[in-house]
Image 1 (spheres, rainbow, N blue to C red):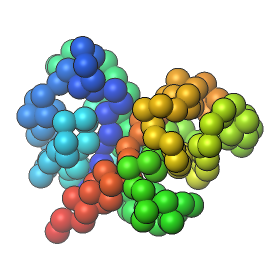
Image 2 (cartoon, rainbow, N blue to C red; image 1 turned 180 degrees about the vertical axis):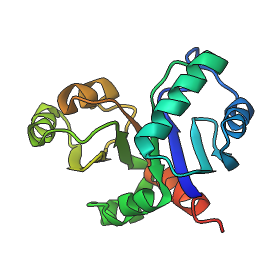
Image 3 (cartoon, one colour; image 1 turned 120 degrees about the vertical axis):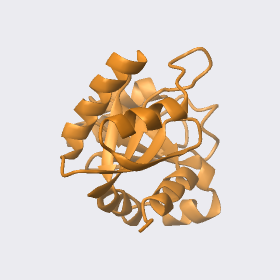
Length: 181
C-alpha cells in the first residue's frame, strides 16, 4: 500500500462546503483506504491506498465525496514520496525557516504552461514572489496572505488550473504524518 496525502479545496470555510473530518475518514475507510488520519479541519488527509495513480484517487475521492457527502470540491492527491519532493524542492528555504506562515505551497491539478508562471508574476501588484515547480506553486507573501491581492482566483486564472494552498507549517506536518510506519 502507498501512503497518500489528499488536499480538499475550499472546505469548511465560513458558510461554504462544510464537512466533518470524521465523515471524510469514514468515506476513505468505505473506499478501502487504511489508517486514515486528518490534520486540522481544513481538508488535509493522510491514508494508505492500494496501487492507484494520484489521478485515479482524485477522481475516485471527488466522485464519492459528491455522491455520498454532497461535497462538490476538487481533491488533490500526492503520494508521500511526491510530498517529500515538494518539501525538498522548496525554492525559498530562508523564508521557510524565518516566516513559514507566509510561505504557501499551492498544489495544482496539472502543471501549468511556463507562460502561466510568467504571466502570474507580472500580474502581482505587491511584493509576493512565485516559483512553479511541476504541479506546485511556491508563493512568498512577505506582507501577509490576508491582505494580498494575489488571490486563489488570480493564481488559477494565470496558471490555467485549479489548486489549493497550504502554509509551510502545514506542509511539514503533512510530511511528518506521511512518514508513519
